[in-house]
Image 1 (tube, rainbow, N blue to C red):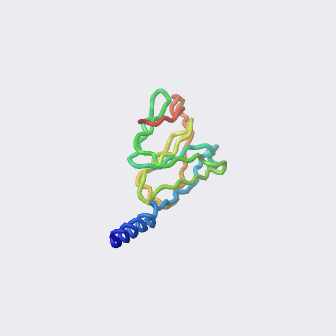
Image 2 (tube, one colour):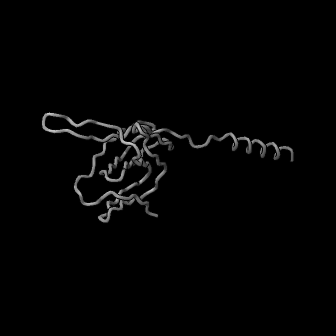
Image 3 (cartoon, rainbow, N blue to C red):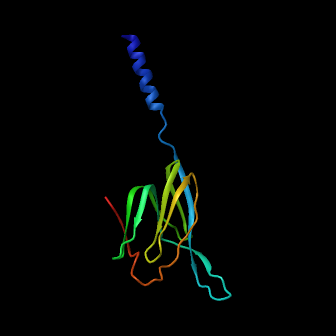
Length: 139
């Protein structure tokens, strides 16, 4: 009986000592280009308020009614700060990253390695078709 108690105590100690899944960081900056003309390059500026998603098997369906739909498993989400920066914590691995903001053409990056850094540049949707007005998540 004493031996079984020691084994049980040792097993419980080992379980408590198991580390939680280590989190890794994906950081970066989202920018957009403004201005520009013949002989003048556009200016790159930080983009505040863009949604950055990281997950597995992510897809973005562009809706003709203005609602874009994210499909797949979203593991983390962040809004960019006034300087365009974002930071997401997920287990180390390879993921899909989606950057979305109302009125801008979304960007989807596949095979992004975390930990790491990913800077994104998205452009204004100038097609005038009313796309990219809302972001929704599929069940």
